[in-house]
Length: 473
Figure (cartoon, rainbow, N blue to C red):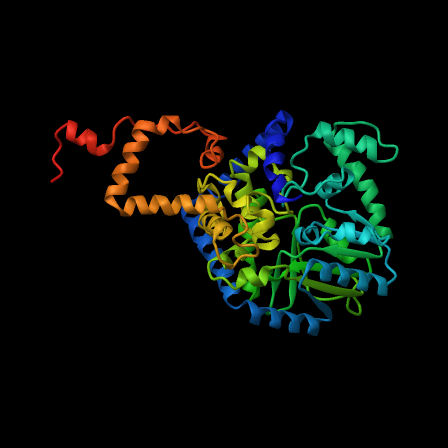
């Protein structure tokens, strides 16, 4: 979806009472559970500071850590590939699968694979791709993208899922029993695991010290994807690396408690290489695809680099008053909510997603709950400025939303405040004739489209002071 469609999509979402009810119920539950997980304020503050320090320190050393990660993984028997663009990422996947004559793929949850459009790219080449995560499987059946980075099908209730399964799964009877619905999906997926030529997973954390790929999950599908097929391909954004293994526990504690309000997920997978002699399971070959897709450009800017701290917990979405009302499908790209508002414009460009930084009240709710202290509100303000800057900036497509009329209006405003005589004339005219300004004039139409038309006072402050005989001393 192009960002130009964001406003229309948001408007449609606001008019959908079922969607809003689904999100309201889900978000209220997630916020309550997360608050209970961090009931000890001192513990939350200390752990959060530690997590932020780990991520900030990793970013400071990012080029070096990536080189160390590649060297250690290669030593462990893992093949490492670098993809600068989305097209390169998909091409690498196709080359690996072609060499193994792989035509059937099971895939665990991975936002980076969504980012490169992996499913569509592989299916176009005749490769069957099945999502193994239950939420991802649900939205795949309905030909949708994830609505949330942790809970992809959070926008659907059980009645909607029941109808979908009865229509899409062969011989499936309609039922609203959650256990039976899960059982239907399990029946399909277990067969796909056994038949798969290759498995794909994401990576939550990569450890440079040991060459370890860490993957957390609750359903076991990640472990099935990474152990049953003979070929395992992992994919991650280049920012996911940390230096030492000891830095993983605080990051995982913040991730799982912020995302699903669990002290730890059901499964924590730590992958260091392919199956070794004497081992009973695991893939015979492991590959890691490391994606850039604009991240190097984000990394180059000291302020915007903070975007890359994100551990993809989704807490900012759960607490965002905009996201909880319009849902994830209103956003262009694959990252919705506050993190999407700062990441998507930097990846896709301000010319494509320049509206997103404005889809915020700057209430700071996302900043308060971010487990790694990303200054989201400050970054939103920065990106709003990048959208209208008159010269090329740090962000792709900077200046694409520049409006000459707006620019000259602000120059005139600044001039009026610098020149006392012009200020007095301007305020005098507005107090006498401001009421006559048409609400749909170019300078006011954006403001009045969502707000009441401004009302000007009948007298200036100086006139009121003189009338009340207030001394200017």
